[in-house]
Length: 135
Image 1: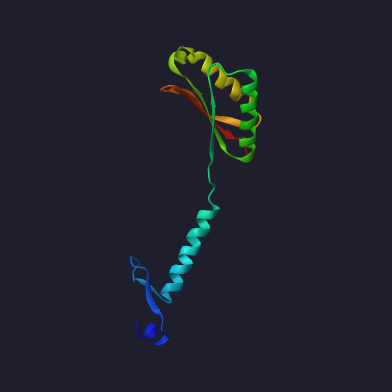
Image 2 (image 1 turned 180 degrees about the horizontal axis):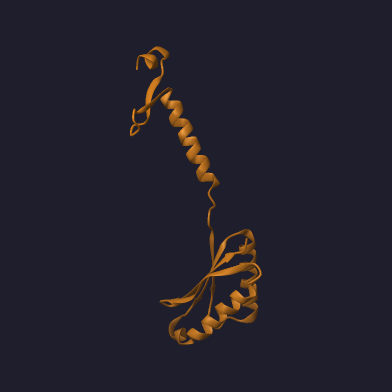
């Protein structure tokens, strides 16, 4: 403590559980600043996962299907995950098989740019499938 006082710095306990405890004579404000800077740098390096959503209907036309397929290809090439869902309105819930066929056809056409992370699954009035980009 005397050494820290003479130098005008702070005595910081680095590892209190060690035997004997480890202490350092440093400027505490500078230490906190560098710690925050390292944490911010680590956060910037982490990959951010973006999920784009594409919604289809059980009776989606060929042109609309291809239009949305092109959007999905663009999203996957940018590195985003694509969540494709078929939304059943009213009594259209009786066409569950048709919705599943649309999703599987969608996945089949995206096989060269993405792979299926989650197979089609019915959640309430929606059938959802998630596709991730290939590396």
